[in-house]
Image (cartoon, rainbow, N blue to C red; front, side, top):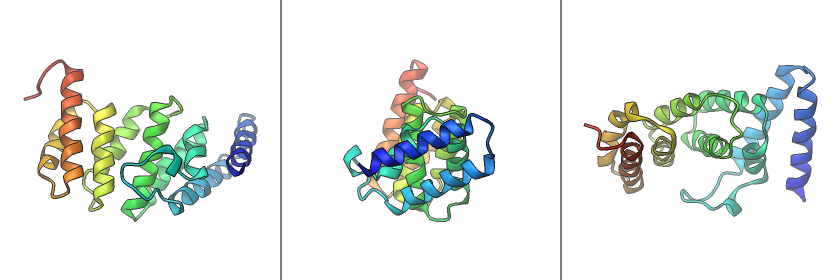
Length: 173
């Protein structure tokens, strides 16, 4: 029920934003929703949709460029690696679901930044994301992660490189 109310509120906000509303107002509302999504963090690295909070689900489903802008800013300003992980999970879901209004390169950039994080969940999700949408130019960034002390990071880096190789038509030297 809460999710339906939240989605209705977002739909109304999205509808109003279509009429040239105040960008700062809508971006701030989405920033608040992003903060809520980070507070209700998923408790497992390898998660199922039923572990996601209503705020996370709502942000994954809404189709509004203000949401993307707010999420990108939230990622840039978040100090905690786990907050950045939450935002990256949402952005990758938006990418997969065709809800993203910014170029995929923006999400690739977030993934590249996440590879250098001390947070192993963020490094893992970043490698996973590059496996989905990265290109041959990201392989050199993934190579060192194959020897990461965290097994999930190393496994995702290997998988990402294999996926990129497959898309490129063969092994990358």
